[in-house]
Length: 601
Image (cartoon, rainbow, N blue to C red; front, side, top):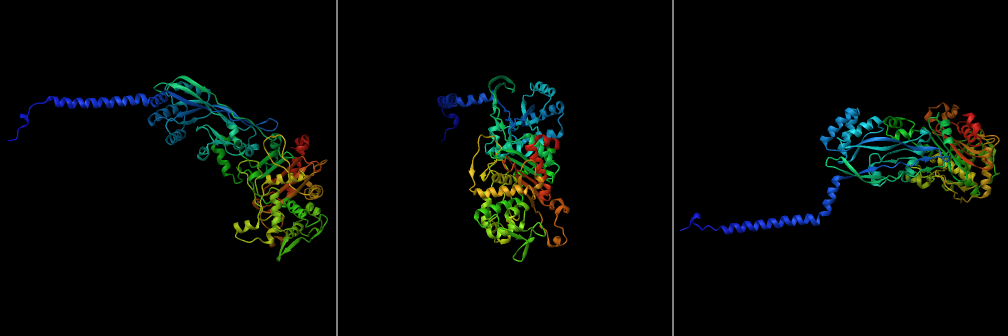
């Protein structure tokens, strides 16, 4: 018979032993965990506890200033107090914004912007609330910090540009870093008020101008209030940059070109390559863009003349008649023509049943190469193109710096285009034709150049065939690289270019008592039809602005002892001799006769 449960003998020792084993095991487990935390995790938790009471505040450095060659300030810093909010919890944020709305009169748009940034930013990251605080606002916010430690008041710097639009493109502007720049490590620390150069000199010398960020290490209590300062590492200001630019000349040229819808001008000193003037019209306010003013951005983006385009280094134009110099050098160096050889110009050149017209309707008659350069005869160079072929012309153009950047190191510089047989086959899926060579020989057709390339090219000629390296940074000495031309070739071209500005198409650039050398250019934007020729409508001045020819002038002064090389391009400005040459004279006058230019202005 099975015994009932209550009939079994009572054995308390078994339960006590089990309980004892459980207690011993629990004690060992707890002791082991305490020992692990005490000895092995001591450093980790000590660091975490320090983080609870020790905080770091970044100190932003002053960005380096930019000067012209005479020490005039082109870019500087204005100090101002700014309010940042250390991104708190959602409930805390609503309370703080309520206080700031009352005390700082924050608008609904500003509050919505802060809330949006808070959602996108990590906890305790800095959010900019307001810039350029008044002393009254600063004193009020300092008082509020005792209750709201999330409020962070710092002394920041606003970038300003004393010459504004005159130096807009060349100096550039700064702005907040984007994702790509952050991934590239452009900034040493992420901060909403740490700005980087976006274009121009601000971008080229960004690492030099940036400076080194500092920090302030403080101890805080449980509610986040600062108890004491533990360490201070001051910021190191960025280095200043001295450029080759002449603020007086740049301002003068900008004022001269401002009435035009679109234009550019470059002045290069020979032989150093120092750029004294780099103007692009229209321009923009770099101060407004650096401060992120929406009205300035909207104005710049909506302007049909594209003021953000730096035409001096990124404007693509057919080089037009100045390119005839390249064709002439190729012919002389190849020995396919003698300077005294004459070619007849009846007013057109016939090729494959098609007539290529000279700008002079009745023709120039029998002329030499020097006369062809002086009078800018198209037919003469059409004939040279047939003898040379595109390969020799393209090779010479590349040798003189066309089709590649000049090395000025300004962001956005374009390479231009020197077409070839391979290029046309690859891009247009067509074979090169003799008609293409004819057009390229006078700087028309598919060839493109920037004003900076044209200025550098004419500087090579002025410097007796020695390469000139354009630069915006003041340097001691300069490189001397021979282009390898025969001395008689350069001497001939210099005579021809001087004559062109004495009795030829560039005579409106003549400046007594100095000798001027140069070449005018008239680049067609829209071809002239046979019907237009029959009706005598070969002048584009009566067409809409965007269909008119581009006017240009390249040259140097004095012709006997070259000191300055210059290029002026007026978009849709008509004929080069009428639209650009007179402006070149005014700039030459400013360069060599400053007091007279001042009276003229």
